[in-house]
Image 1: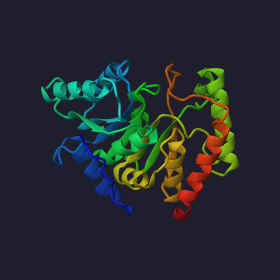
Image 2: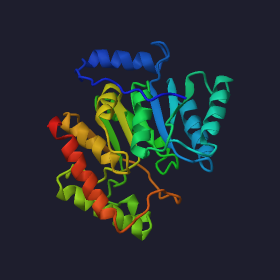
Image 3: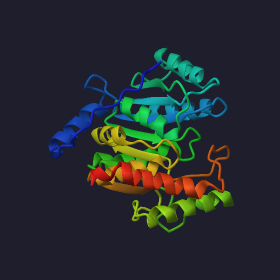
Image 4: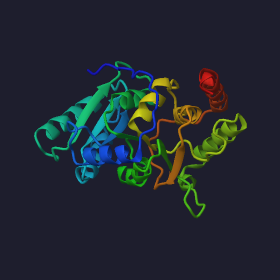
Length: 283
């Protein structure tokens, strides 16, 4: 079992363009001790039904890339076969089923702590120069990370998927009515409380970070529930990190663990206020 290790707070220092490009090219080619160029973090909680297909698709994508990479599955205290599924993929990777430059890792919580906590643990244990996270259901498929990566390589510290397309269409319209209403309620409350009012989609399950930015942001992240995405971006903004939205493909997938309840509004307000109170010293 991998224990959760918190990264120390990091001061982000600017790099010259030449140094950044030289280091990125070295890591793309698999040097620098085979440090991953890209890490993909996938949270999982009792996902034995859909995890095998999800892992295999992510690994197939990474296997086709011209750089060293890793998949870090962060198991949030699953009580089903989820950890065993990951360990089986680790064995296959070590046996050479995938390219040598692709590795699979498992980090675990002893008990269920929530999606936000699982992603935090995965991010803080990831080694890649660029670190992405996505959902186990692959509502936003791994291939979409290729749209965010060029922004990060160009110098962005945070690049986030957006379900709002260049033509103004919104892929969230494919959700069931109760999910759409819950999402609109959250966005309205978030903007009313002045939490990232200029970002229309904070909850898309595809986000990418430059390594040092990821470690610094997630070392401060605390919310464990589903609005942790907004907290992460709030912290990044407060630390002076630019956030670049990038339109990505997304589809609604049945089986979400989010349950829309009458108490949802209060919980959202509570967490948004907690977010601002906990991180007020960052500004």
